[in-house]
Image (tube, rainbow, N blue to C red; front, top):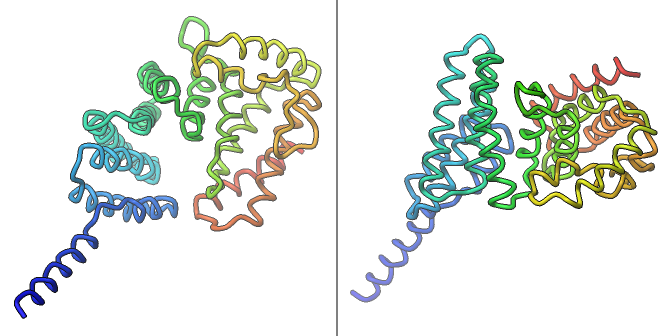
Length: 299
């Protein structure tokens, strides 16, 4: 009888331990549904369960990630609130790097820092740029992480929005290649309409003709082959094969259309995909509305 009770107690304890096991799947699912407050709560609960530095680091970079979204969701007039959330996010990322360095910790450290600078204003954003580039270089070079759409998006935004020349390292041609990579690495379970909008805007602003594209992409092919690091190589991603690639939304290669023709095609594609994609999030609906207006202004 005593043995039977011992077995029952052991089974109960084992069941309880399973219920309390470290598991980030629910927090990730909440984040994917844009339930950011609930995501933070779930992550804080999992942090208590972490038993190793690596497990805690996994929680911490996710906390850094969700702080970007929480900050973005605040009203633009609440600058102090945004600063506080982005600073908290960067602190989580730094602690994650201390516990167990990872590509994602560098990415979300960079993202929080960048959002803080953008909220402060152009000069502050410029002041954050070098540190952001250092972090993103770690992602693509040191950790060889090439499938992170968010990383390519942030890299593209840096090069697109910063001035070039002697002021900073901005380069709109490199921005397009990085953004093309961001489009090509979007997770299959996500829509990311804002990525398509950003890519289309960069193409429309560059405004190369089909003939100029053919010429420039051929040059890029040589640079692609000669580059020694991932950061350098993917500056020329769109010219990796001289422009013979057919994008997944096109029936013609890159050299068969102009930048602005492709920009309209990109927006048309995401508008059609939106009609059949599920699940649709509130943020997707808002971005699609902006895309519809933008496409109407171009055609």
